[in-house]
Image (cartoon, rainbow, N blue to C red; front, side, top):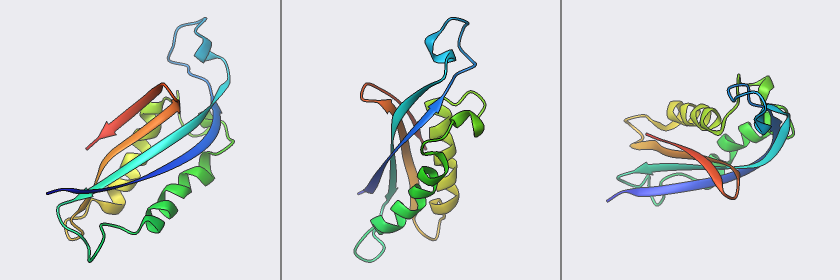
Length: 122
């Protein structure tokens, strides 16, 4: 049996991609309303729950405070959804992938709109 909890967070930010060919529309400054979903999992509960959603909100909220209404190029070279997802994954990996907790980061999904997303799974 595997238990999972997830939390969703949204932020708006601008960026431009340098790793695409000249003339590609994403080379120009543009913005997205990003949606981030973080999924944690464990094989047993910590008391009656896996993790308090409020704790997960606080941890995820640090990224919203950092990136919301900012230019992501100030934080990443060529800020793709994949790079954003990987940064969030590593953050939660450091917080929750601890043997004594029995909890681990399972997945981070970053959507830049309703039809496009990138995902990192551990």
